[in-house]
Length: 176
Image 1 (cartoon, rainbow, N blue to C red):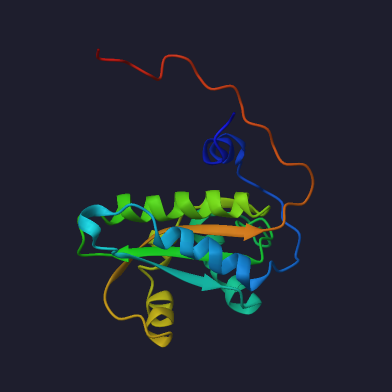
Image 2: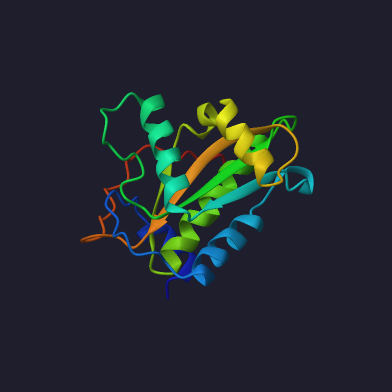
């Protein structure tokens, strides 16, 4: 019998085409909650999530991300996903990237377990070095200095889910 968590880990794939339909808020909240339970150094819980479901704000973030990535005008680096869960971590915490990465991993798996698609999109670090996005944090009541770790783009997958590529050999070494 296959453990459900291991099954989800093996089946989850990055989705690169989303429907525009907004997932239920309850699903988004469950995904965020899964992130809150990620392992973290010394129990500091130094990562936060900014949930963006407002289409205008989502599109502005997508445009900033597109510019940082150097893609042509009109390209959507979030592949049409209607929800962007931005993980940031306390800039003064040495384990910020590790802790935030675990939050991202939990959220990606949670989305899959709820029948939603997701993908990790980079460039949050560069975005949240810009004054416009620091101001957004301030405007929504987030104090302190934060480093962007990643965007968890979430929504309903458009089309067939990709299957996993064969895992490469030679990636495990034992010391017995």
